[in-house]
Amino acid sequence: MKSSKQTRSLLTAIAIAMVLVVPIQAQRGKPPKQQAPIPATVTFRCVTAPEPASTLCNEPVIDGTDRVRDDGGSYSGFIDPSGLFTSQLSTPESGRLLNMYFGSSIPGSRTCIAVVNCHPNGPSDGKDLGLNNAEVRIKPLVDGTWADLPGLLLGMSCNSRYSALVHYTFWLPDGDGHWGFNFNPREYPNTTAADVFRLDNLTWTVEAYSDDIGELLSWAHSGIHGKNGPSREGRFNMPFKLTINATGPLPVGAVTCPQ
Image (cartoon, rainbow, N blue to C red; front, side):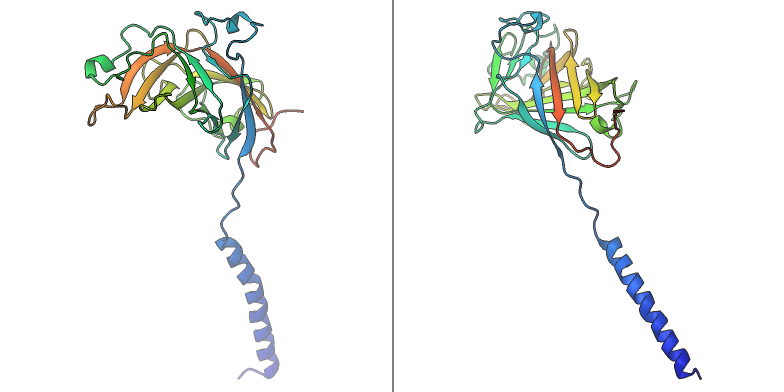
């Protein structure tokens, strides 16, 4: 039989163990703290009807000039913890516009004609659209592949250029259908990626050149019946350049630039 002294020692040891174990178990059961998105602004190189400081911003829009333009000011956006950039560029409530100027579609690319699911308003060729409900998302890729770059914008090396998927999504002013204009060769053959360049810890530029190609697609407009969507309304050259300025701070694990 154990002495009272041994019993007291054993009880003391058990109590100490419980004090140590309970906080550890509680800590393990606590979900990890979510990192907050990083606020950012996005500004396009050209504005609608600017004083043409550059031939890329000429009005009226001609071949080789920027075809995606802001309405005279920056838009708010954010970089989420995965490194994906998103900006709700315009909403009906905000009064803001994103301006897209469509030229002639690439011959043979408007395949909705064969499927008989084109938008009833006709082709977008030559139309100037002031979009009051539009979003853009930007996702860098691993060099030489169509795989997502780990960390996306936050995983990019500094002073380095990467390919990027760029998705513009929007509703037309008449509200007929949800639309996308996408630079995404991973999902849409015969389109090209855009370029993204990281200037410093909190600044990126994204650019599509005059020979880059995006595709215009629509989901659930009044010309689509049953399961014959999306409608492929043509591929277009749609050059633009935008700058993302984040306010920081960078999350733990993000690639940082030399200071």
